Image 1 (cartoon, helix red, strand yellow):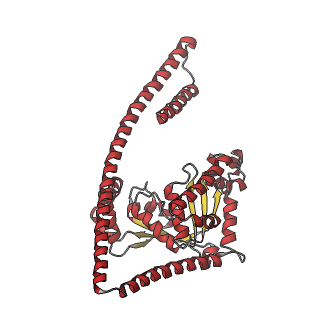
Image 2 (image 1 turned 90 degrees about the horizontal axis):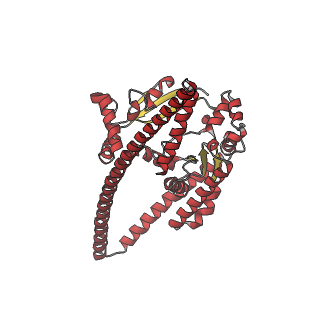
Image 3 (image 1 turned 135 degrees about the horizontal axis):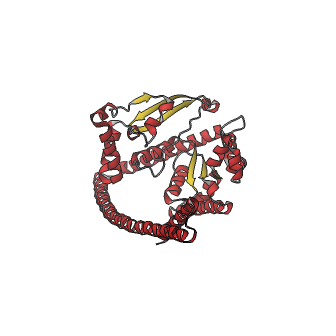
Length: 383
């Protein structure tokens, strides 16, 4: 498919001010903001406007706006990018949105992801097979299916070529177990069957699929992956089953999503009306007492927030000390590893000169270095 248009959307002033507030609490965010100010200086005001600035850009130059490696650092100012493609199924009212991750450095981008879920009918959640399901993954999945409008969720387990089929199965079972445990904590055990019926799991090796799709299938087959083994066919079938063709369930998904949204709105309105009715039935003295309770609750919540903020500062300070200690430890360990490698190389060269009057082959020296580095790093990680 050919991309017909590309638009970049910048942070507006209100959003940028929120970034500045976050930077005061998060060192990495402060670096992000400082980098933007250093790169743009006074010209920053040309991009950060009251209403979000939108620019149409050449697709071939899109990486200049989105890549962190670009010298311009435009990516620091970009909120999101919109692409228009001449793909048939996008003409059927379907939009595909690649949201920021749940661990994005810029907290506001993570918030964009969470806000967008309220507009989403079907969701793909990408999960690295090496990390399994984190608490953030599980909480996000539960929130999407129980409290948002998502009617269908596909968990795509990435990098499937790096583990065995048994390990893949263990990752899926672990994810289901984690969902069950989290639902139990939330007293939502009855929702387990619904969630497991709504979720599907498909492992994928994007690298192997890419090799097959770009004429390098011999490399993928040599690694033991046919096109079917990559998981890409299963994902394509999933999409066609749910979204495309006369037998798709796209309409059903949209109806389910709208129903969920309407029920949430009705429940919210019902709770508000019930509370208002209860107030109407109370005397002036009872209303004053109710107001006093709310004031006390607000004060209690404010105190709780202050305690949490103090705890965060304490934990941040402790973590900074731990990271500094770890950095010092690694510095010492890598210096010792460097010395060890040098000693092994000198020893091997000396032995070769004494025995054969020649220098050892480069391949042997490379092997000595690689083995020493591998063994050394494993020992460091264990320690």
